[in-house]
Image (tube, rainbow, N blue to C red; front, side, top):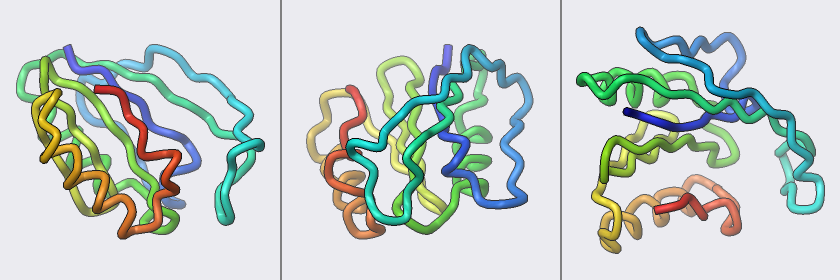
Amino acid sequence: MITGYVLGESLRPGAVFAPHGLRIHKVERIDVSASATAGQPAFWTLVEWEADDDGASGPIAEALAYALEPDNGWYADFTVGDERVIVFAGKVFRYRRGDEAGRAEAVAYGRSVGTPEHQLDWEE
């Protein structure tokens, strides 16, 4: 099973994120005004999704990399078994949970594209 989320606000205008086999688990509107940074909205639409683990992780990562807004360091992440997949606009990172070097590489890239430090907190 592949599980992940994407923020509606992180998708670039006109983008469509609809990989085959994707199922929406939950859509939730959350207030992040206390920690919002410049260029980011005070409210986010969190879309939790899942898909079967039948080789879909590559197409899902590619679809996200294409759909994400390149400004403000937006990213999405998901898990496939014990693997973490962190996706930025045009860039995908994959590493096993607990792989500190793999995580550090994704975090460093997030910093380089403007992801606020407090948002580089995906769960292992």
